[in-house]
Length: 71
Image (cartoon, rainbow, N blue to C red; front, top):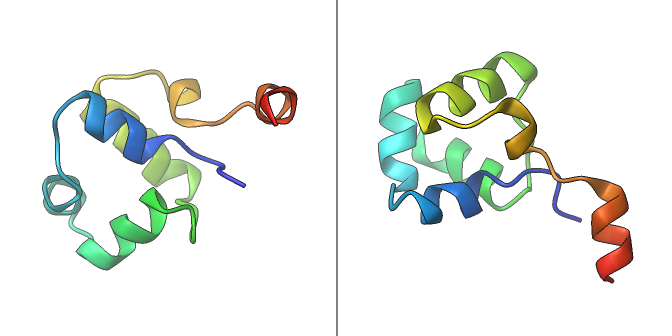
């Protein structure tokens, strides 16, 4: 199950995972794990990502009720 929309928003904004990794001072593999939902960022990191991508924090989080209705 997808828990975050980081990858989707990066694509929408034409930004790369490498760029996000550089901005956050994290490895590409960590950012890739976030984007593939293998690992979830902590709230502080999620807030930083939202700020870098100029989106609301809630826009990075998938609403489980909507996900369930789609499936």
